[in-house]
Image (cartoon, rainbow, N blue to C red):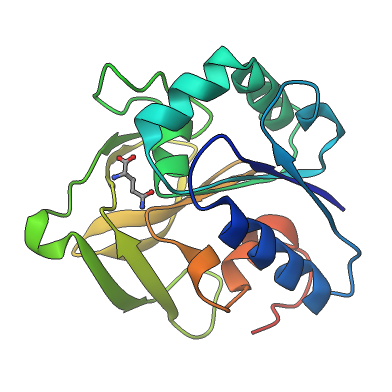
Length: 197
Ligand code: GLN
């Protein structure tokens, strides 16, 4: 499996390590490449869109010609896992002029919507398709406020969607790459295999 981590900004190293762990649990050889330029995404089987600063990530992926390649990857039905800022960048509308979203996940989002006192929090969140709750780490997380018809809501917190699937893209407001639990990666990349806790 060729896994591309979009590496213009954000928690790239954590994503690289997490996808390696997830692949190893399935005895799947993984080659992880960090994507900072155009021309790499077309060779990737799966992509990871890190958390970080969505305005910066958005600006750089468009500037480097990576944005169009991500859209083509999704149009070809190839998997993507997008977390936090990655979700914002993948959304249809981030309601912020500094983010030019890719529109590959049919949701609208509110950046930093969980409020100052909840800037960072952790919660055990039930996820559709998983037997046990997932320990979810939220860091200045976005809220999803509108979900398109074709989007499956996988999890909610306080009634708000925090994990969704839109075709080949799984997107979370939290950071599965920061825990050693590969079940969200399994949902994104190994949907037909037994979940490995
Ligand atoms: N608040 C950040 C943004 O709007 C996202 C935070 C994160 O990825 N942990 O880009």
